[in-house]
Image 1 (cartoon, one colour):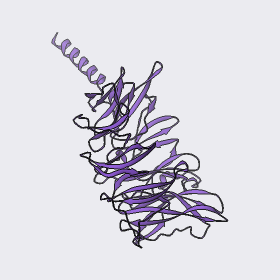
Image 2 (image 1 turned 120 degrees about the vertical axis):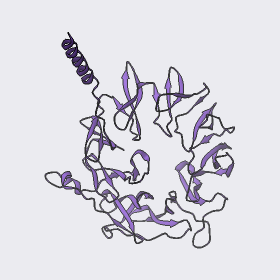
Image 3 (image 1 turned 180 degrees about the horizontal axis):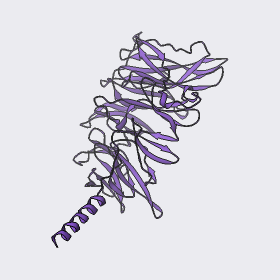
Amino acid sequence: MKKLLLILFISIFSFTLCGCEKENYLDGAIAVVYQNDIPYLINTKFETYSLEKYDYIVPEFGKYLVVSNTKGDDKVYGFIKNTGEEIIKPTYTSATVFSEDKAIVGLDGKLMIINPQNDCLYTFPQNMHSSKLYSEDMLVVEVDGKYTYLDNNFNLADIAYDYAASFVNGYAVVGNIIDGQIQYGLIDKQFNVVIPLEHDFLDSYYDGYCRVADAVDAKNNEYIYHFIKLDGTYLLNENGKIASYDYALNFSNGVAVVADYTTQDLYGTYKVYKFIGTDGKDAFSYRFKHEGEGLYYFENLVYSSMTDTLVSVYRFKTSGAGAWSVLELYDGTFEAITLTIPEEFKDNENIIYFKSPYEMTNFKYTNNEMTEGATPYARVRIYTGQYGLIDATGTYVLPADYSFLFY
């Protein structure tokens, strides 16, 4: 009898172990890639975890991802870790990604803020809603058609604007409609107005300046750009006058890309770019390996403080061809980086990867977090329409083999 009971116990124990086998999730995922319309988490070792059981993955990569399935005629949303582990079953009728460990979800006509443990932290009143993300402990919310902020303790700021942006570097852009036209200014975390609401355009605060613009022809989106300090003074050029440009990007790591338009009979109107420092002077010169092959102009130049690289698209006006290029700053000069392909990425003909990507994002850290030892990546798209991931040296981390990729 004892022997029979022991055998029965062992059988039950073995069955329990088999039934509770732990699923192998993926460590170190850097992206979601698609092959044959199936999404996978992938790491730098090319290990994958299938997300096939979900109908859709919201293309925002982070510590947590938003997933959805179809339930009847509706979509329901839930959350997984970037290991593949499901932490919140698809249940909600709407959902934002997590930011500062908070996400906004909708269920049964109610809008709520939850944490990754699926605890309801706050329920919005009927006259309030938001589709934004928490940034610097503040959330932009709309209340009765006006915008204000909800803090981490869910206290509502006693301010109201016709426009409000998220906080960046301790300040936020706000705006009011004045005489039928919206005018922008800047507020601090105590909601004090730092820059008056009197500008046709105002951008977030970086490196001591906000990019600001006056409309020349607002209907055709034509502006003259300047840079303004918190004390209301403007960046001056080398001649001691207010620096003005036809085109400008925000400062990043003490450098801003600016441009003025020029017109030539043969080539039409195009931008002539240069790089300025926070002192208003030329930051450095630049040159390109393709110099002399034809007149080219640049679009979407973004200087990355994360990598000391410049991402740009250039087109040769003589041929009409377009290609993306990655450029590295060193010794005050820009040189084009040659994209390098490890042997295991090369196809049989060894041709496809030597073509320049025609589309590329700026460099950013996976999970949007800069941690010790982390590597920033940029997504590229080649002429076949496939996507890959490169690092700041121009080396492919993931080959351009995927029908889609986000990180």
